[in-house]
Image 1 (cartoon, one colour):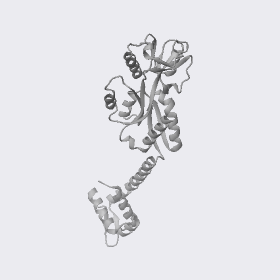
Image 2 (cartoon, rainbow, N blue to C red):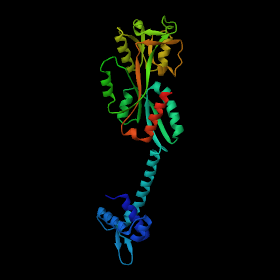
Image 3 (cartoon, helix red, strand yellow):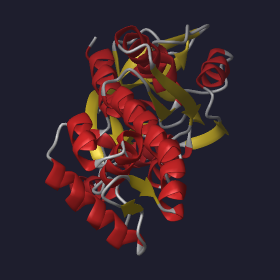
Image 4 (tube, helix red, strand yellow):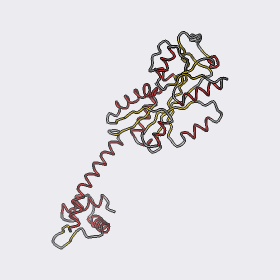
Length: 304
């Protein structure tokens, strides 16, 4: 195997014409240069230098190797400089995937702070709900996934959650409580707190599949099965449907931060239903400086 250090010695010998001169240029001893040339010739299986009492010159194989060495060593230097830039956060790329309410609240502040601190780091953003976002992370289609999971009503929720993300680095960000959303003319719109059971006879508007599943679980725990007449992943659409008097809904508080309710009112719902917001990455990616910096900024954005 040809090593870069041997190519550097060969190039120095070719440029200076002797082992001793090459040693001075490289800052090592003449025996060290001679030894490395022997190793290189053994690696390629043919002589690279012709040594006489009056001169030292390259063989045809030596000339070929020196010609290629320039390009190889300059390429390695460029690669080393680029990697050093990435390691020092002067460059780098992070592919982020997030669910919509995270994209509109946590992500903008985090990316603005990241750009201010490390302007050479570039971040791309794609929207996806879990579990699809987590699949993208495991498939190598992103570097960081902003995701969530609900507090399950089952006793084995902790074991299930551990299994779901057990192979990933999990950075907890915040606990997001769900609020009830009612038409402003609803009989309970002015209440401070509403029991889930009080909404048993309502028409419901459900969100993403994971949110819909959690809605059904929470309602069944309260003693009824919700009648879901509408389902949409679009939070403004949910608010519009509620505002038009077509039903009631559960929405995360995080989602309400970026949407102005029209003709709808939020109420606190008991018992509380929460979802855990996290940033996920793979163990190897967590050691990449740009990825680590992105996780840090997401955590700071969630703490504000």
